[in-house]
Length: 355
Length: 278
Image 1: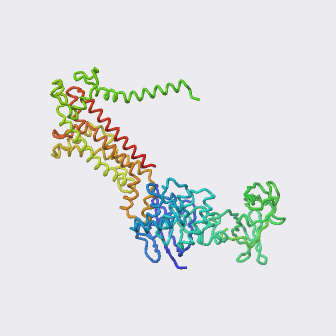
Image 2: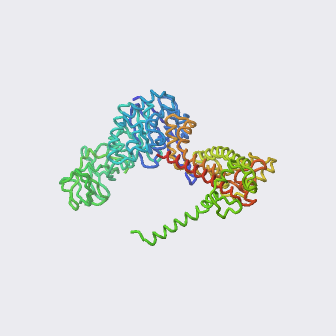
Image 3: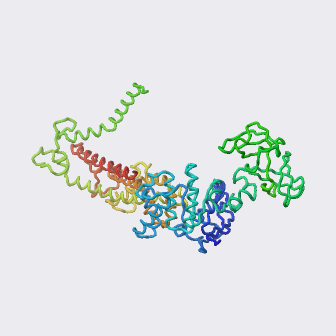
């Protein structure tokens, strides 16, 4: 894949109110390919927004380089960078019509009115707002404003579009609809998207690759499946989706199955590859990795949460230790107080080398 | 349920409050139509004479001879009005530009002594007029500047820029900085962003500040009294001079016309504002 954006050793420090120094970006390396959908994911303060603002030019890097299509961006002011942004607050110009908002980049670039009008109509069409050009942003709903912001950002045909938590202000249904539309739009436009969010579900749904960040550093880069199934460490495992973590000691290895036991005595089967007896590792199992059966970890259901077709249950293992979170089919006999056995497929267990 | 006693008390209080504020104005408006030339407090009969006299329409020679002595000359008053308007237009322009530029600088840029500037900009508004007036007078005399219309304009600008600053600052505080970032992101230089995004967004505040500055400049007596020379007298200073030689009926007519002009300006301002926020 041809690299569109190359960031290497990006560093940005801020002075805290107490006078200390805090690295919002602490040596970030990232490459984004043309037409790739990359999501920056992490908790508040992890540096994802700073990284986005450094790409758009609103933050200046203390160190490191940034190249777009081989052109050095580092010293360019925001208005000279061929990237556009969809802002979290949408940042629509309230004193202009929707059409003038959308055509702003062309107006500023000196494009003639006739050509501008045609492109504005085309952009509004693309985001499903055809014929709304005469309205004011104040007369639109949240979802429509979001679309105007999107049309405004894509009209100049940037190679790279930056989206700063653009869906966070929308309600759940609209958000899910926009997630699919954004993905479709990205394909049809053929431009790269860098999308910032703290919503892991959103990241999993939309991305080609996810960049998980913490405290100014990249923890892991990978496809959604990669990140979900093979997290590199506890932080990534716990941040992406619901997770059960079991610190275990390998008890014995037989064939391609290893047996691990927690300090409380809960027994788990792990893939044997690379395991040795006495080794301490962390086993990761997602709630959906367990099935209710007659064999497996014995326990008792302490709480149930109804999710529709599925049932989310908390199981207290008989041996002791923290509750295990499990997703079961509704009607599988997992009512509160029921005694159950939790079985799992050893190959679905992901093992972290550190205990 | 409404408490009838409380409701009646509230109504009475409201009426008393408005009477307290507006009664003096209505007294002045009423007496401006009183024909009694000697004692304006005693109603004689209805007349437009004072307005006609002010506007130079009445033939004074046929009237009671002492009437002619009241308004020294219509020409003098019109000259004072012209001075007031000239001063107000120039000071409004200068202080609006200064106040707006300062508000933008303090809200959008980080620099040394920023907090100190903020404090100093409040000072001229809190300082008693008389102190500011004397201070300006001593300053002009010290640097050897003759009192003229220029000194009035400089004097007014010193405190009116602060008023504009306060009002524009309140407006800019409510504007999402992301708007300017969006403009830059879409390829606009700082200058284009200022022209196409920030100033239009600030327009209601700038307009409000300008109207306030204009009205205060037209109205100012104390500071102008100290810094105006013998040649250039503003309307408030001229009226103050007239009153010192006894209250004359023309004053009521002048005051009524000023009230009328103020209402028109205020209405204009409100109308422009309501248009902006549709």
